[in-house]
Image 1 (cartoon, one colour):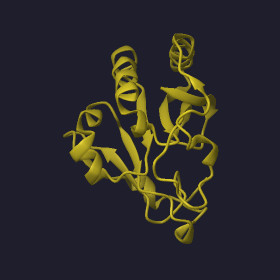
Image 2 (spheres, one colour):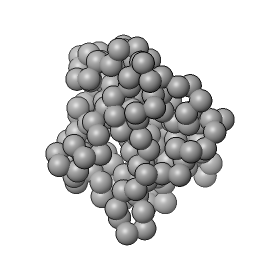
Image 3 (tube, one colour):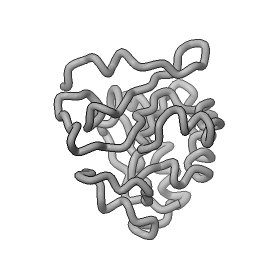
Image 4 (cartoon, helix red, strand yellow):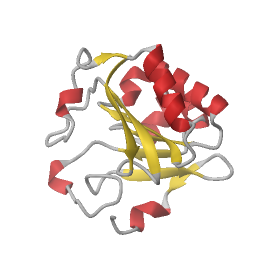
Amino acid sequence: MRIHSITYPDANNGLGFRVTLWVSGCVHHCKGCQNQETWDFNSGREFTDEDKNKIFDILSLPYIKGITFSGGDPLCSYNDVLSLMKEIKNKFSEKDIWVYTGYTIEFIKEHFGEMLNYVNFIVDGKFIEEQKDVSLPFRGSKNQRIWEKAENGEFIRSKIENKAAN
């Protein structure tokens, strides 16, 4: 897996202060994307054990609520991302995991279903420039949806969608 960066504390890509892993590679190429530099699968650098340890150190901090996978599209590096999610949930079960993806929840359930065992929130859908709305919390266009894992393990539309932006 290649990454562009690891940022923290990040309060823009999920609830609370978090660490965000910016994964290289995207097949969606949304017009007006704010992260076009992450589209190329060969951009950035190789994810290393040092990077993983840095993420674990950050997640150990009491004020860090969880990790966000963004990019690029982290699902374009699915196997590596899934492996890291499993390790994170094993070591830090109390921390939440957010994923930003251009894929829809319906596609995710069909093609990336195992990931749903580890993720707490999904922001799904391609960014559509004509539907851009900067007042939306945690997403860039009106078509994008925030899904939250309910107590029964099913993903439901999150109430966060209706809250005003910070």
